[in-house]
Amino acid sequence: MDVLVLGGTVFLGRAVVAEAQAIGAKVTVFNRGKSGMSPDGAEQVIGDRTVASDLQQLAGRHFDIVVDTSGYVPVDVALSAKLLAPSCDYYAFVSTINVFPGWPEQPDYRADGLHDGDPDATRADAPEGESVAYGWLKRGCELAVQREFGADRSSVLRAGCIVGPDDTAVGRLSWWIDRVSRGGEVLAPGGPNDPVAVVDSRDLAQFALARPVGAFEVTGDPAPRGGLLASCREVTGSDATFTWVDADWLTKQDVEEWTEIPLWSSGPSTFGHDNRAAKAAGLPVRPVQHTVADTWAWQEGIAGGWQTADRTPGLDPAKEAQLLAAWPGRPS
Image (cartoon, rainbow, N blue to C red; front, side, top):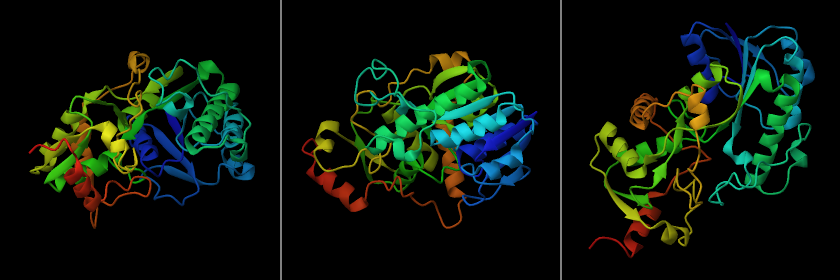
């Protein structure tokens, strides 16, 4: 089997390459060669997907599966999909739950359907607002893929929060593991039974390579936040204790959801995904404890130690201490 990964050098792209190689596939990656080292054993084609002449290097080449992990602007995705459609069998596009404009503010975020999107839109065409623009553009990317490959030769994988080893780009789960590993009193948002649903990058990669047909919400099963944090404590061997702080109180304290406190948002449907269709189509869902353990093992192996990412700075220790001291519900 021949697999083409658009991207392939960072996090999810690397997971797709590794999972494809594990099943004996020949893998080609197409990227600019700027975001990371090309994975061992993969053929690397250097090029910019926004430049038609660069993409011509792939013209006429046959691939059984194309996995697009780097598409964000519809006009760019349309360019690659149109060039590859005549010679490739199947195109898996990694999208996002943000294509639903009601997520995460509305309890039923599917009620108002999807963003309209435009398969030929440029970044300049996007509506104002970072989150709105992201979802609108990703929806346009979905439409571009479906237009060129058709519904029977493509999949749209609307991922929730992707976590796992080798997450150098965002690191939401990695931040929590690192924080718990340092021990002491840890500020935990909400309550221990609040659900958290994440998808392991390797499970998402395996699903894409299985060539499901259709559009799917791709996430793991919901797990109690208390259990997730307990797993972080168990694998790191720390002495951390958790002080659960009311979510409504936190929102009034100038705490940035999702960035200062990763994997936490006050939105009622933040983790209200429905992965039943994806699971029925073959999505594997490993226990979150396994993902935590593998991610910690990866973090421990990083030379110089794991570092936060710009997109997920996490809660400053001094601010965490201040919040814990000010929390009126703190146990006496």
